Image (cartoon, rainbow, N blue to C red):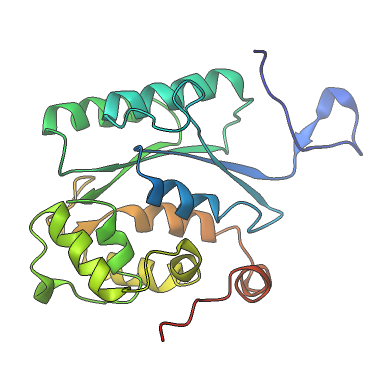
Length: 223
C-alpha cells in the first residue's frame, strides 16, 4: 500500500500544499474498551483528526503486547503522510507487562518526533474511574481485576463509552491532580492518559467541544 495523503488545503499552489489540521494517531492494546473509547473522539474538531490505529492483520482480536502495539504504529507511520506537527500515542497498561518491554517501547518513542507512550497503572480502567472519581485511594485497586470490579460497581448498567467520553475533561483534571510521579511511568492507581487528552484539547474550541457533547454524545442516565 502506498503512502496515504489526506485533507490538504487546495487554495494554494500544489508545490506549497499545507494541511489544515493536526493528526493524532492512537494505538492501544487489544482491549475493546480502549478502542471504543478513543474512536468516539473522531470528528471532535475541524482542526484535528483523531485516528485509531487498527491492526489490519488481527482486526478482531489483535495481539496486545507492547511490542505488537509499537509494530502496529510503525506500520501505520510507513503508510501515512505524517508531518512535524502530527503525533502518535501508544496507550498501554502496566499490569500485564514487565518493565523491560515497556522501557523498550518508551526508548523507541523517545527517538521519534512527537511519539508518546502513556501508561495506566495497573490498567485502562483507572483512567475510566477518574471520569467520576477525583481520588481512588479508598477503592483498593491493586490489580487490574480490582479496577474492573470497581468500574462495574460504578456502572452496574454496563460500560458505555459515550457515558465516559463526555466527561474526559473532568477525568483529565482528576488524573493530573492525582499523578505524583516524576516521569513517564505512573505510580499505582495513576494514569498518564491525561497527557493525550490535554494535548488534543488545545486544538478543540469551547464551541466545538460543546457541540461534540450536546449533539452527539449525550451522557447516559445512571438510573
